[in-house]
Structures are given as C-alpha cells and as structure tokens.
Image (tube, rainbow, N blue to C red; front, side, top):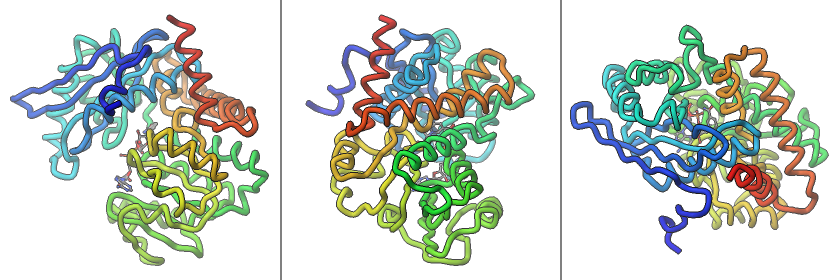
Amino acid sequence: MTEEAQMYDKIGPEKIVRFYDAKSGLKGYLIIDNTRRGPAKGGVRLRPDVDELEVFRLARAMTLKCAMADLPFGGGKSGIIADPKKLSKKQKKTLLVAYGRAIKHLAPSEYVSAPDMNTAEQEMAWIVEGNGSKKCVTGKPRRLGGIPHELGSTGFGVYHSTLVALKYLKKDVKQITFAVEGFGNVGEFAAKYLCEAGAKLVAVSDSNGVLVCPEGIDFSRLQKIKKKKGSVTAYGKGKILEGNAILDVRCDVLITAAIKDLVRLEDASRLYFSLIVEGSNIPMSHATEELLHRKGILVIPDFVANAGGVISSYVEYKGGTIKDMWRMVEQKVVKNTKLVLSRKGRCPRCVADAIALKRVNGYS
Ligand code: NAD
C-alpha cells in the first residue's frame, strides 16, 4: 500500500483542505481527521517542508490523543509551508492573519487550532485577528483569555510521563542521564523539570546541531545561552555534532521534542537508551516502535506522553484557570502512562492505539 493510500480508513480523514492565497503568499493544508468526539483539535505547524501526509499523520495523532485523554475533541492539524528563518515579523503576521481567514469556514465550528512547531501565543493572536473569533484557537495570550503553551504544559506532562516510565523500569530519576532532541517549547520544559528532579542532562539539540556534554549540562546556563545566542550549540563546553547524532548519545533516556521520523528502523541497532519518551509527534513509525519494544527499549507513545498541550487547550476552551490546567495535565498524563504500561509485556503503542481507537469508535 502506498503511504497516501494509508491515509484513508474507517476513522478518517473527514476533510482535506488545501489553501492558497496569492496576495499573502499563504500556502498549506488543514486536515480534519475525525470529529466524532467533538471539534477537531490540533495545532498549526509552520515549516518549509511540511506536506499533506505529515499533516494527516499529525491529525491522526491528535484524534488518538484527544480520545486517550478522554477530551470532547476530535483530531485535526494544519501546516503552513514557509521557512520561519526567512520571514520578517511582518511577513509572519501576514501569513498567520491570512491563515485565520482561510480556515474561517471551519474554525471554530469544526476545527480549533493551536500552537505547534514555530507557532506560539503571538501567532495565535494573529490567527484570531484574521478569523474574527477567539474560539478558533487555544494557546492564546492571557490578554485574549488564553492559557499560553509557553507556560510549558506539554513539557510538564512529558516530565510526568517520564517519571512513571522510570518507576516502571525501577530507575531512580536522580541516577539517570538523559538527552533531549529539540530545545523549543516542549524540550526546554521537559529538560527543566527533569533537571530540577535531579536527572543529569548530557546532550541537547536544536536546528543548528547537537551539544554533547557527558559531565552534565547546567540547565539555567543553557537556557540563558539559547535565549541570548539563539542556539544550544553556543553553550561553550562539550562537543558539537551534526544531524541526528543525538541518537548515538550513551545515556539512559531520550526525550524527543522536534522533528518527525527522527528514529528510523535502521537506527535501532545504534540506540543505547533504555527509555524513549515521545515529546514530539510522530518521531518514529509504529513498525520502529514495535522493533524497539522487541529489543527491550521502552517507548512511551507521543499521544500518551505529550498530551499536556491539548489538555491545557481543553482547560482554556472551557474557561478554566492555569491552576486547573497544571492539575489536569499531571493527573491525565500520569493515569494514561500507567494505563499503557499496565499490560505487561505488550508494546505500549499497540496498547495505546487499542484504547484510543475504542474511545473514538465509541462515538460512531
Ligand atoms: P518549537 O518550535 O517550540 O521547538 C522546536 C525545536 O526543535 C527548536 O528548538 C528547533 O530548533 C528544534 N529543531 C528543529 N529542527 C530540528 C532538528 N532537525 N534537530 C533537532 N532539533 C530541531 O516546537 P514545539 O512546540 O516544542 O514542538 C516540538 C514537537 O512537539 C513537535 O513535534 C510538536 O508537534 C510536538 N508537540 C508540541 C506541543 C506544544 O504544546 N507545543 C504539544 C504536543 C506536541
């Protein structure tokens, strides 16, 4: 079966929208995968290489994530084809306002957008400006009644999921070493909480390269350098490597927090980690996860570990407080990580898919 043929099954997608606006240069996709449980929820990714299949895979991950978290949302996703490094603030605003307008016929009635790679609370405000309804996005600035993802809800959830998995593996968080792929919204907060809990950060990457520092990376120094110089590679100590060299790091845990398909089937033999927690969406195929399971590497699936963002979105959507958000993220992520690990010996992805699909189909 071709990858494209795999897009169509009993779950969805319900709608595939391609948008193009000659005036602003906006080009991209909105895919509504499934709305049985409620309006499709899923962020907008801005990257030069985002394509339809990627947006569909992310939309499906959202369908499963919302069902797993037992939220009254379906799954969807948007992709804007543009290079954030080549856009001025004004050009970015033009694109996001145009995107808000382009999805007006579907958002907020059938689809509610949110931040994803290269989009954050400011971009959400621009989308509202183009769309006209504050309900069309979550992750908005507080002045618009939002709970910004910049508070770190997803990374906080990834941290809690990691703690549950470590306990399952009978490992003490204070004794482990870890690596983080991507130092954006998800990676930075996951690293922060794990460092605060006593784990040792030994490698971190961003789009400029991979910093490897076996003696340990000082989190607050790293955070300041990233903010000031724009990249973790300016840390000033350790080795700087290229590409996906983060996969070769010899440490206990890998947190993925950037690109799709980071780990491929052929990478299985080079991995040293005993635990991979998927902070990013679709960092590997299901076949790769099953292979790693057979090799004894525990992988916590994306829609279980990184549901913090959509749980925060739900709290915002129903008018809850930031305090409600922290409580609900911890409670749901811990509960679901324990649930997928409770079927001893089974691949966590298979367990999670079965639970989520049952919850989607329950709403036929
Ligand atoms: P972000 O734009 O804030 O950060 C992305 C980070 O990845 C940046 O540090 C960037 O430099 C880095 N990066 C880009 N290309 C890279 C590469 N080739 N190698 C290593 N690092 C690279 O994005 P984010 O919001 O943190 O999202 C990261 C992932 O987490 C995505 O897969 C996203 O779908 C997923 N996710 C995000 C949220 C959320 O609330 N933001 C929620 C759930 C899942």
